[in-house]
Length: 195
Image (cartoon, rainbow, N blue to C red; front, side):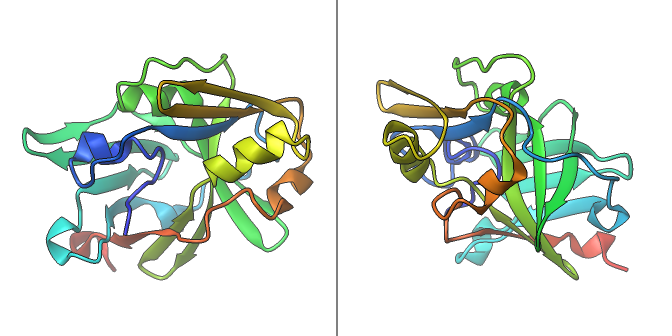
């Protein structure tokens, strides 16, 4: 299983998988209003992998004020991100989380800069001590932008692909059938943080 909570480049940073390119889709503005922080998300969440030895290579640390710190475990030890605001919202049956797009890029040493205010968004679901994230389906989003089914722009540089959905997207954009990957990323609450 690929562990890709915020950017596919994370695998390079975490040393879990070797990917040849970074892919990311950002929004010019969040397509829905932010709601209150969910206290049930507070605590450390460890990435889960088919190989149990790789569990916890990525840790999402969320505090009660919805500040997110991303820890990646690699050969050189643990690398912790700067804190950033984690925003939460709901559209229909689904919940979403988003962060500043430049923060996400900075964590993975990418030199692609997003305009100020752009966000990176994932679909989320929490079931007890399990947290599931669906990242954007970046190749499908790029095709939808090129074909005019989504409003945006595509930047392809070397083997990197950066999509930007432009304008004030209505929440209905989140219902687009190609927006999210079918395979989610799984996290489990750290044992020491379980009630």
